[in-house]
Image 1 (cartoon, rainbow, N blue to C red):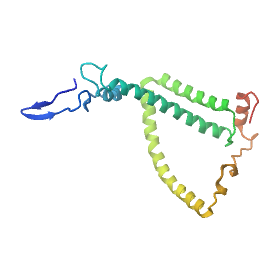
Image 2 (image 1 turned 45 degrees about the vertical axis):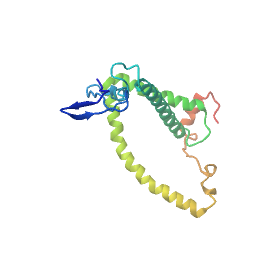
Image 3 (image 1 turned 135 degrees about the horizontal axis):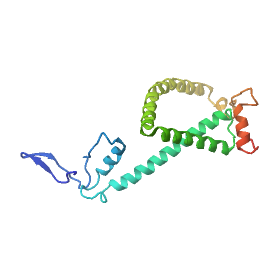
Image 4 (image 1 turned 90 degrees about the vertical axis):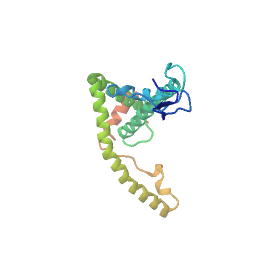
Amino acid sequence: DVPQETLSQDGTVVFENHLLGVTPVCQFDSSQSNTAAFNVLYSFSFPDSFDTGFGPTLSVLFIISLAIYFATSSDSGSLIVDHLASNGRKNHHWIQRLFWAVTEGAVATALLSAGGEQALQAVQAASIVCGLPFCFMLCYLLQSIELFCREALIVGDGHDYRLSAQSTFSVPIYGGIFNNMEFLTSAGSVN
């Protein structure tokens, strides 16, 4: 139970709670790491009843925020893959982007279904391991951003850096092998 009253031991105050129902104390169980976030959120509830306090509200907000995070991350990934698959063209059919979003979701679902808990832990470990070199790459890219800003300052008007003036990728196979995929998935209405 989370203490709601002032606790003292041998005349010394060990814990004093000024806001009833709001405490920084929660129980962590390392064998159930999946519930750690909810343990922290429910620590802001009264100890006898989890139906009162801030815990249930914070848990609902946490689930909504997590769903928004995953939806926007998947949408961003689909946008990048779609941009690469359409050889850098900005105007491409929306069905192609939907195809990549469904494909990414199906691959993730298949991986997690096939491997279970070990697959989830492997994906988490792989994302951490791959994230460290990516951080160094982002730090290196700061130099190119600074160089780009200095060049734009020298040019002054910025006309050279408009997106309409930028060329798209060029691949010699019918403008790209993925144009065939766009042609098939958009029922022949390639932009």
